[in-house]
Amino acid sequence: MLRHVLATRYATPLREGGSLPGVMEGDDLGTWVVKFTGAGQGPKALVAEVIVGELARGLGLAVPELVLVDVDPDLGRTEPDQEVQDLLRASPGRNLGMDYLPGSITYDPLAFPVEPALAARVIWLDAFTLNVDRSWRNPNLLVWGARLWLIDHGAALYPHHDWAGAAAAVDRPLPGFADHVLLPVLGADAPDLLAAVDRELAPAVTAELLSRIVGLVPPEWAEVPGSAYVDWLLSRVSGERPWLAAMLAPTEPLVTRSEPARRAAGRGTGRPDWLRGGSGA
Image (cartoon, rainbow, N blue to C red; front, side, top):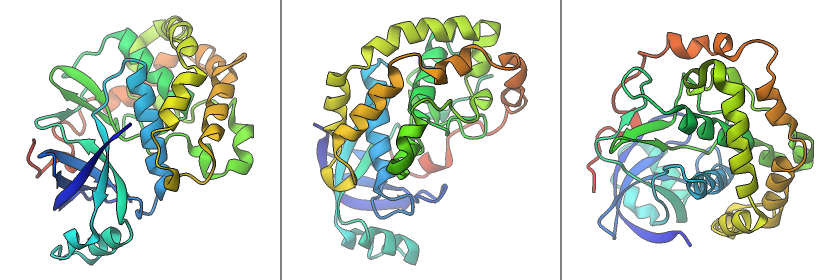
């Protein structure tokens, strides 16, 4: 089970995107980046955060600890921003916290070399879960303790926003695959590396693993039974997997298609905005 933490202080809002997460301190003396159920993206973004984040952890990738953060709306009463007050009032009870990593920096391909095998594992995970938010524009990767850490998976599993059409997305390739921030690491060996990683990871995505992970999601966050997520993900990882074939046999060379990542290699280095201004724990 995910640990439960009681929020004791709302420290500062993190003004990125539309979700407006906040840095909060907890009764465990930790500091957490909290995403709220009342944000514009709704609880389904938190469902995706839990499922994909814990799946990544289960497959051996580094993800900051996720916890359930109990939030009292009164914690924001002294916040001068009305938007923050409204968000906290709309998010009583359980929300999602991600461990604040003090001193972490945004992944910069020029400053932090990544092993091709690790890059291939991250790309495979993102393609499998349809995570459209790991591009050169927004890496959602941190470097901390000389390791690469995966964050922010709320945009993954996007077919769950329309379950009526989710079955049609089982074989869907990852949109924007050519812009994945780690694709240049693979170079011309991309098809071979991705195929090798698939042979390793696909068998590890079992019904038992998925059931355990989906069971971590608070029932009030999901509009369908957890078995719907398990069945959809199993269908996606089984059979011929056309979404994988689309990566292994692209219509044009992968290295050429990933040129935007190299053009942006020196852009946006340093500590990400949402991690500035808080104190580590």
